[in-house]
Length: 302
Image 1 (tube, rainbow, N blue to C red):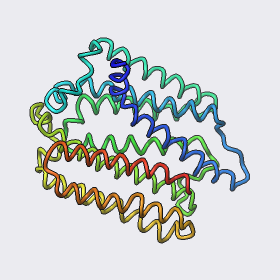
Image 2: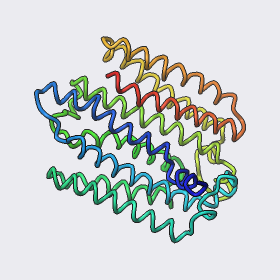
Image 3: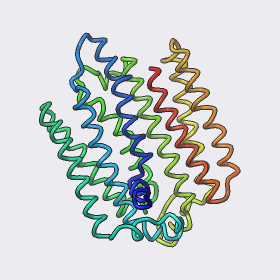
Image 4: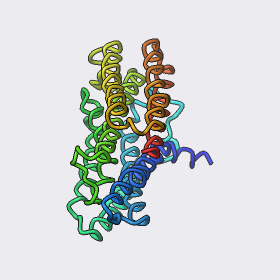
């Protein structure tokens, strides 16, 4: 039982559920209805779409594993009570699982890409694998680049969801459905970027020992908070403006976004302003996860 718990912790199982839910809800509640409006059938059926999203989850799990592998020194300082790698798994086994999960994810994505004659799209999975590896070994310790990379990779999960549907006009910004997906993509980017900076504040002691150049270490915690406030302002502005100009006919969705995202976000920012301990920053990171989950579920109201 303890080993199973360690495995679920290692692969960040709740995060994987978030990724899977994000893709499948976006596909069936935004993309498929948009395709149906053009009197066409979706390219992907239930089986192929599920396989595609499983490949994303496998590659993400491999990324979490290799990240923990290279984070052992930092975690020894920040979370010694949560250390799982050396207690339950050998270093060699971790690397093997990282490779196997990536290969399996690529094989599944390759099968879907080949089956639908979209082999060029396989480059996205390959790039994601390489970026996750570079992030864990290098960019995580660099100023802002690691935060930005994770935010981009997270938003890519929504982008790839639409790629296999040529009848979904992804780049047509005059199309309400396309704009809705881009709004959620921006939401995913901003909320992830905020949480990554908050995690850097939370892990500041371990990052200092490992000579990392994170935002709170270079600019200080107070300036890091100001950057988070700026990102939150941009995110709130996007939600409010989209509610006014794009979602004005969908009253239920508008109310859900304001009550479920904007209001809790403002409360979280107030708690961030008062926070000064690692435990408090960890709680704020958890609140951001809850807001993210509400954002994912709100897509069902589109």
